[in-house]
Image (cartoon, rainbow, N blue to C red; front, side, top):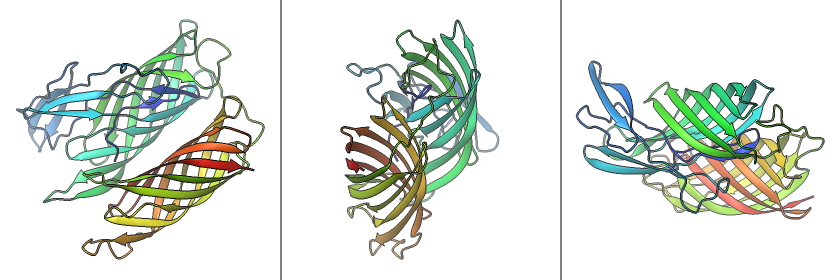
Length: 376
């Protein structure tokens, strides 16, 4: 999985990079006599084994990186932890999209990467419902959110070398305070608690800045997104190339290529058919057909479009001769994607996509692609 665990968010259809990550912990990996030494400290308490209590601290050193302009991309932060007197530094990134459902409610879709908990690389999507309270002439908004979390965890093997890709469910509880400036920029402070069915829980304190993609009519956030009168996409053919990253402890990479046909079904829904080649430089070489449905939105006079898609990947698995999974097990895999497109002319556009291939035999991958599309 990605080695990044911070978050960015789209607030009232705006983009927000987070600049600070959360204190993370793993009860099975920590020892009572091994404090986590940090700069800004928050305490958490957990349980080791059945009866033995322990306490440790963790933090993130956070702040806007020099030279990084607000809204120019995901925020990056470093976490410094000392476990058994060994320092570890983690980088982090993520994405969040949020829309208002009236004055007091909102919804969001987030890709949350929790970073490298010892022995685990855990991330995944969460959809949250928010109750919000505007204050101070709507310049300050307090909000509480909750929603399901579908996580993907790359775990170290219990015995010997190796790893496994574990999938499961959890819940994300959030509290957020947002300040809206007179120039559309926002400042955000958020507390997250992640509770999962199998594994360690995490708690995060995050700072970030955001920018609404649709200009608000009044101070503060928009109560509702702007309606659309036409499809985001009619027809589009895109050629893309990039890299495949195996979700293992070593994150092996290979070159990837794809071709995609996209057609708009409604004003907010697209469908795609494509062919994906994940490369041959890893222990698992796959290629095959893809089919997805997409939720889409367009901004800035339809020049920029964003979408999140889910679907299936009928892949042929070619393992090495010494690979336990060289029998073609799991030809059908799940596929979850996020994509952004910028229309350069009425017919030509540039597109970048991130794809997560979800398997049942511990060969999950991230496929990052960029290319050029023709619209007609």
